[in-house]
Length: 342
Image 1 (tube, rainbow, N blue to C red):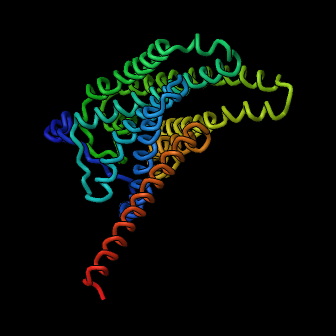
Image 2: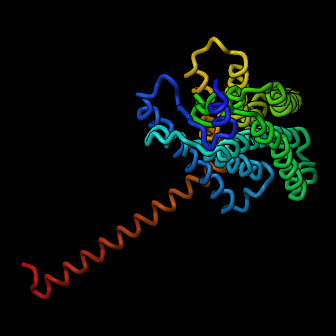
């Protein structure tokens, strides 16, 4: 490679996102489920935030953490989906050098925050089931704020080295990223330098983000299961376990594709490239879509408030239509009396 070409890519002004390599012809069709999922993410998570804010009875630690999860999902999906849809619909593949690294930071930052929130929610369930009388004294509003700030600070600090490490590498090969977004390892592979530091740090963050949080979740739910099986009746065991089932579902929906995507990116070299890209999008899109659906279906207080909201709106619409119909009939009757109608 000539010196001039090397210089051109040492500090590229833009990267080129290919989308899903090999499936460019089907981008428009693939955009339909992607767009549908994004609409569900927006509507579902804003609904959760609206219901919790409006109902004072839901101002409890569990629902505060659920609101944190909703905000995290909104930021995580919005950091990638608009650009992905622009690629699919308008073939807008260019992304600014700094914007690419910003996107990379937001993905890792809010993925770490979401993982931390799941760990905190597991602790909340542990205290609520194993120490119900002390729940309100342990998880006070002040403690919830401290825990939330700690989770956000941890995610922000863990993700901070990613853009700085990636920015320092010289990019003398190409500026084409065969992905729908600026995925860390795909950007690192473009550099023409020894990038083992970035790779090792990525594994370290994976251990801190998934390994420690999953360990904490497993310990919490081990204690929860011990408490559940110690209950005297089967109905009590099922009812208590039902309060944790929604949390377990969202945990599996987040950690399984996240772990699978991280490992296949590093070690699954024999897998088709479009498969890597699909899995890389699954853990960014599916959990933010499923979280409000699962909690809306399983969390009875939220489901009841949502039904009340829709029934109240439906009643208001019905009353407005009835009142409008009454006015119409009254006008027609007046016209008939005045002889304006036959």
